Length: 343
Ligand code: 2NL
Image (tube, rainbow, N blue to C red; front, side, top):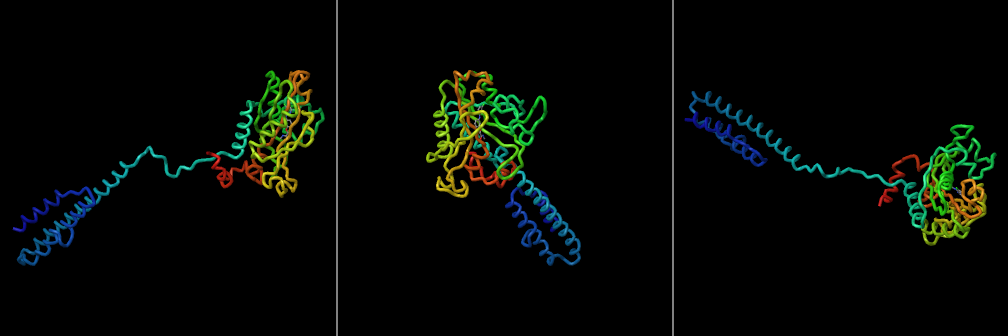
């Protein structure tokens, strides 16, 4: 009698299945819990005659074991199914959640802003080699034979006699432009330059320059002044004023340093401008006729102006950076501050 009932339960256990957490729980209630059909078999024990108790007990224990083995099997099956459905839900085309974007380096942003301003008033871009000969870096630019800038302490020489060196300014690029093109010339030469200086908060042996050159008939000092007035207002804001201070460069005559009103105090005087209200942004002048002639341009017919600025210096003024070494240390705590420049 009970044998038949037990066989039926065993068959039911063998046929049982579960694909979800709910079906697994239903199985547990049906075959594992105290109130299950298997639990009820243990309760039946007291109705079994004594002489059959032993064989009945063995059968019931076998059913219990079968029920538990099947339960483990179904737990495994449901957990595998859960894992599979999770990976099926995954969208491999989505970007990773921890994707961290870089930013534009402040020197790149500053250079690009300078280029944009001059391109809009008709300047094109020119590039040239960083390793230069003596002619393009010094002689064509009217540097006297024994000028101190040619000396070992200022210039990184690669070879001597004939001299080959790392360019000390991007004027060498503009010499090449003048040698190869006819006026009118309006060109901007951004690039890396090298000088043999001790590294400090204010100086580095590698830095960046932008030089500009305008050569045509009737180019005068008023053109130089107005071009740089325009640049200063575009770069630093409408309120910015420009002042020219007489100076000397071998390749320009007359020559002038370019100052702008201090960006921090607006000209009142502070510790950035050392109380003067003015900060220097570069140098400029009318191209020396000797330089034009050296480059194959008739100085009787043509005149020109030129200017040069250090990109690091402009970036330091614009972003209030106190130490030039930060530009090349690649410290993310410094670089992260310029992430908004990406937009
Ligand atoms: C400065 C000063 C200057 C020039 C650069 C130049 C180029 C040619 C001819 C004449 Cl091909 N001049 N460039 C002129 C005056 C100043 O740079 O303080 N640079 C950071």
